[in-house]
Length: 72
Image (cartoon, rainbow, N blue to C red; front, top):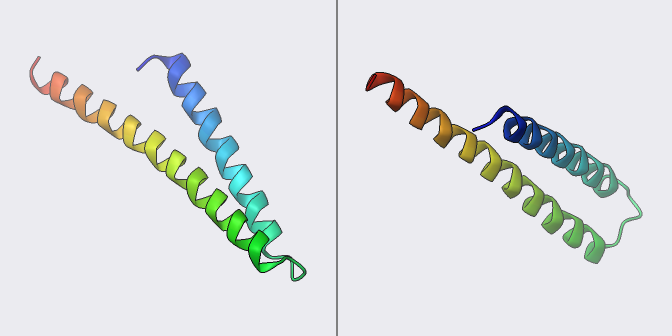
């Protein structure tokens, strides 16, 4: 994976975590409706899955690099 792609993923994951934190703040509001809280919760889960997918992709690249290093 190139340095540019890694930095792009890092920014994306950091941005997504910030968005998740904002969603959590909204969910902490006592005046939020049940319908809105479900919508925010669902949005948060989707963003968290995106983060997990990014981390999984990076882990797979690391495994590949480790295997290549063992074969050298």
